[in-house]
Amino acid sequence: MSGSLTIVGLGPGEAHWLTPAAQAAIEAASDLVGYGPYLDRLPAREGQVKHGSDNRVEVTRARHALQLAFEGRRVAVVSGGDPGVFAMAAAVFEALEAGEPDWLAVPITVEPGITAMLAAAARAGAPLGGDFCAISLSDNLKPWEVITQRLEAALSADFVISLYNPISKARPWQLGEALALAARHRPAETPVIFARAIGRADEVLRVLSMSEAVAAAGSADMATLVMIGASSTRLIAREGATPIVYTPRSVTKSPCATSQGRT
Image (cartoon, rainbow, N blue to C red; front, side, top):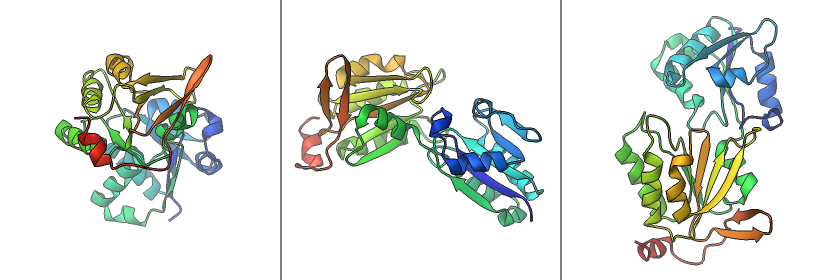
């Protein structure tokens, strides 16, 4: 079989955050498959075919890519950020597991990218210096009750929490509810980062207090990564500049005792 499939992470946006391995996979591909706006970020190459689709047809897109690869094409499936974080790598393997037996012979490679929480953390300082987790607030593929259960558990364990897919036109209320839940576990001065379009020309990084973040929930969109600090997360103030946010690597008290004292 001469075909192959590579699942590529494009990183946050700008080309300098695209890994050399990901760039090489894109350049070697005969076919690029992905969400339309992600494909638009890639310059056209002679002889290369782009297969764009909507953002809610991930498994259908993955099936198409697998079939193209089975037919002998060199396919790159592109994702923003990292393809293994709430993105196309899982969709491809879901399609592979449930798909045509012949697809199992297709060579598949995953090329990682810089995911949104790492880009946001780098801009802010080192908020992920201690233990952390990531939760998607989208309830397209899982019930909202599951999301709130997981968020409650992560807050009780005192993780720094990165919230992906925080808000959309169809879900304008969920970030506000998630931050209201967080406010019951974290003091009002806890740092909360709103990182929008990091790595692009229109990027915006805001460091808010928990009480400010609850009020600002409606200003986020799907290009925003929201990061909730742990009880140990700290700010270093700088005159005329955004404060540095970091979480120490050491833990000096029980997370359970901390969260119980704040509820």
